[in-house]
Figure 1 (tube, rainbow, N blue to C red):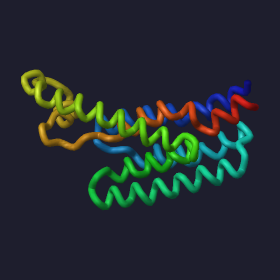
Figure 2: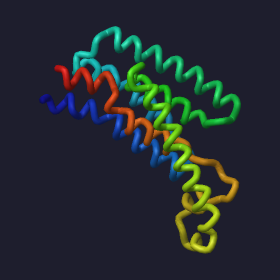
Figure 3: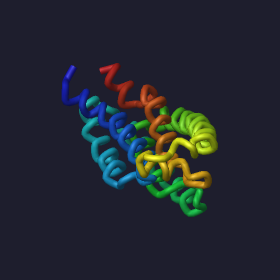
Figure 4: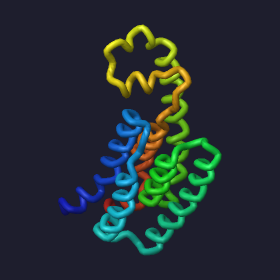
Length: 170
């Protein structure tokens, strides 16, 4: 096992966690996270010997996800950072893992939204002295940082990634 390959394969889960935490605490997903996900995919694919067709499929799935995400952003259903993060994640997950990713993102999004609504309803008396991001998160009609669900969905679907399949097979 090559340590560089393991580090490259760890980039996607690490950046998914960072994106979820950044969205939770600031309601923003910085562009550098999605950019680094895209840039690090290609050395990771090369390191595990991913088939060029699988790379091309990942690019196609990511492009489709970006178009759909841009439409959802235009309709104000998600933020721009969410759309870019979903597309960059689909690049890593390819056709094999993207369906699982969308399913897990929806499930985790529903669970997170329900938990957040419950917390918003019951947290008002306890917010005195809380950090600013917690107060913002607990606003009764505030935005929901969906990057948390996207990150959770990415982590749950990552085992279905063609990168991991190529790594295990190699």
